[in-house]
Image (cartoon, rainbow, N blue to C red; front, side, top):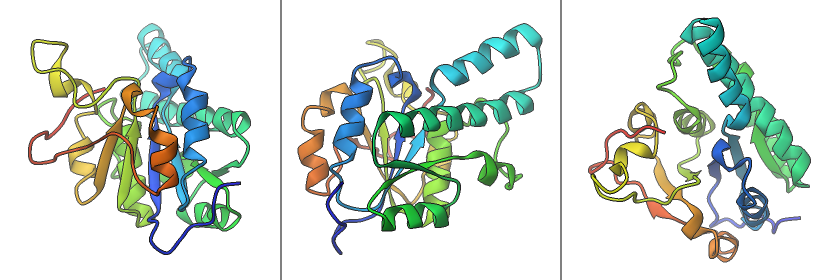
Length: 217
């Protein structure tokens, strides 16, 4: 059971990348996150479930709108797997359900289907991935701190040395994440992550909105 939240520890939304699904780092990040002493909600990526949607769309040629809906269902599938892998993680469809989970000293894992289907303003496109949906959820939940956990480090290499900033988040992210305190953590941040979380801090590097406007994953 994680430590009880203190008055100084802010609520946190963490997007946990689907690209970590086949990595040993996934279990390590889940264990590290359990050390965070404040209210914590995990937004799952799509992982192999979203990859299956991409492959199916290429074969069957269904619309981006259908693919987007299926990709959100893929996030929910990945979230269900995370809840099974780590004790103390419980699914939550809304910020209200997440708050009830936090009151039980547990970590909420957002099940995004219901909320996203209820908002027609959400872009039905591959340009809006779980990164932007995590930022959207953070605003809906009134949470100011957002951490994106990736399988690559941030800041990325300069242009010409591996793709540059345009390879980290989706093109919609800068728009949806405005007003949030955003950090991005990759493999290099994992070693210190348990201690950092236990202090109520965020591992990784801060996302600079003035320097990096939109980047794709």
